[in-house]
Image 1 (tube, one colour):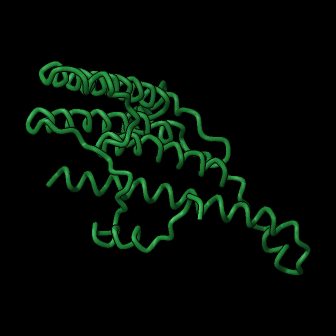
Image 2 (image 1 turned 180 degrees about the vertical axis):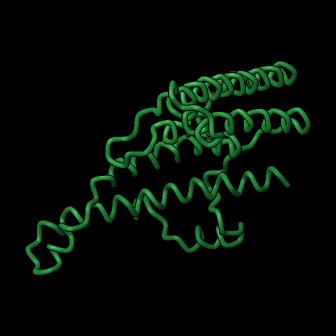
Length: 214
């Protein structure tokens, strides 16, 4: 139950970030070119709008999307890997090598998440937490903010520990499934989400053939 909720939450976050960043960039470009067109009232209206924050927010959203997308990639088995040598190993050695790689991945992402959390904490998160707890903030720095949005940088950088710990969990999840069933998640490039196999076959059958001399 927990993993299903986490899976859906992970997908919703990635979808929201990707769609939101795309819309922000689109409206920012339309606004930039629209202000250069001398249309009465419309140009004045567009000039009154301020989109200086759009680029910064789009960058932040794409960074968050990339971090959480990496965790999604571990779960779905879409990360690039060279497994020619591993596939040629005996079954027992192959099992050991795969588990070693998964454990190393979990260890690495766990370390990155911990270091990232330490950085975020010292970058201003401790000021926000202690403020909520009502403690004395005299000797605690508030931390820097972003140039345009003026958001606390610790909030922006928190993508590192959140996504790294999620990625660590995915490595452990894949490793546990591999120990139980001996299978790794595999991404089928020919499969399209939302289409059944029969619909998929009909699309390919209806598609015109390309290439070859006539």
